[in-house]
Image 1 (tube, one colour):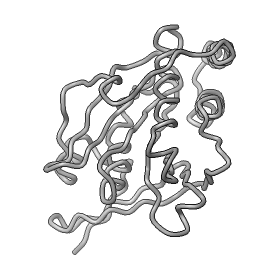
Image 2 (image 1 turned 90 degrees about the vertical axis):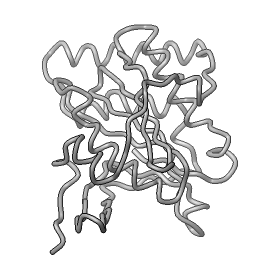
Image 3 (image 1 turned 135 degrees about the vertical axis):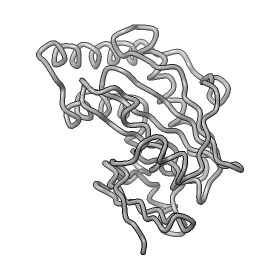
Image 4 (image 1 turned 180 degrees about the horizontal axis):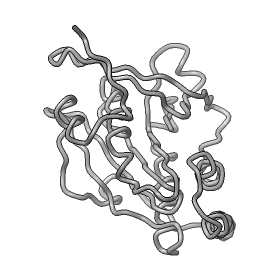
Length: 222
């Protein structure tokens, strides 16, 4: 009998066991990305995003929905993700079959963004998976879900970036297809600390500008 489980109910140990994912030592962004200095306009917009979120955070708990609205949406627009070649869909369902365990994993992703041209002829290449939590949650609570969703993309590509955020803290993760597949946590970044805020935006922009994304019609997942 096949057991169906929700991705949101998996522990990190469950993910390691079911997906055979192995954690690697903490990595460096510059091992994989070229980070560019911010323009004056980008610095001003980033400060505005920080101040907007800080004001809401001072009033109390910020919900997952508001985290997306106040931080992710403007950050992604500023980083260039609202490109005309990209199409967004909402509430996409993901399913993973683990034959050795007679287990199906199901989950529902917030937003799926794909390249319009590529989606017609082939599966989209995922560049970024984002999992959001409310402002009071530890970002690593979202790691099992993030890894599960991102793992699905490794069926058709060699690597994918992930991001978990509660609006204040941002945890990037890099997954690679190997035997066994691996994931690597990057340094934890804080939106309210200027150097961290700059770096988290630089990373987001660098992911959007990956050569393979720009040249071959690649999509991204959030």
